[in-house]
Structure formats: C-alpha cells, structure tokens
Length: 149
Image (cartoon, rainbow, N blue to C red; front, side, top):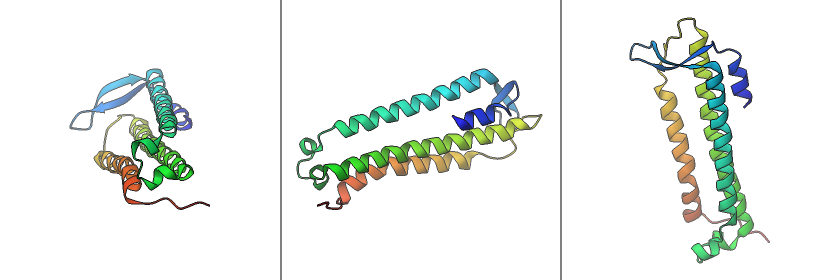
C-alpha cells in the first residue's frame, strides 16, 4: 500500500496503462480509478493468501497422506506452510511493486512513451511465481522435516 501511495503522487491525471506496438499510450485510467483498482488488488490478494494460509493450517495432513513424515511433524509442517504462503505473497508484492515503478517512470515523461521493453519483467515474475508454487509440493514429497524433540 505504501508503494501505491508513493506512486500516486507522481502520476498525471490520466495514467497510461496500455501501449501500442510503437510505444505510444493507447489506454488510460483516471488517477483515482487507478489508485482504487490497485488498492483493491493488493487488499484482495492479501485476503485470498491469508484465507489460503488458514485453510492449509487447518488441513489434517495425517489423513491425506498418512505415511508422510511431514504429516507426523505437525509443527514443522505448520512452519513450512506459513513460510510458503509468506514467500508467495512476497513474490506477488515484489512483482507488483516493479510494475508500479515501471508505470511511474513511463508516466513521469510528458509524452508517456513506453521506451523500454518490459517483457523481461513479466518473464522474471512468471519464473519466480512458478518457482514458489512448485516449491511446496517438491518440499513435501522430496524432503524430510527436521526432527524436533
């Protein structure tokens, strides 16, 4: 939310959010609509990831996979699930921050031209998101928790 407030002050009244192949803006949003849309996305994602975390912590893994060592180490499993959901939220927030900073830089120019290729940002974000998403099943199936006394 801090980044949304920070970038809000730098945006012009019409924020360029879509660009044609020449880099010229083709789609605009009012500054206020842009702010409320982004605030809604951030709050919605936080709510959904929080609900996912709560539901994962409520699952009885000993019934789902009784032979799993993770299911028998409830504290280690809870720690792993909390860490994983926090990592997922961190990757999403980081990606969102870079998008906001990129839009801020583009809209700071009076012509609002897209002069740099932002495709690398999408690829990095997708790779990081897939890495976090697949890390939980890989950790659950191919590693063992540290045994606590």
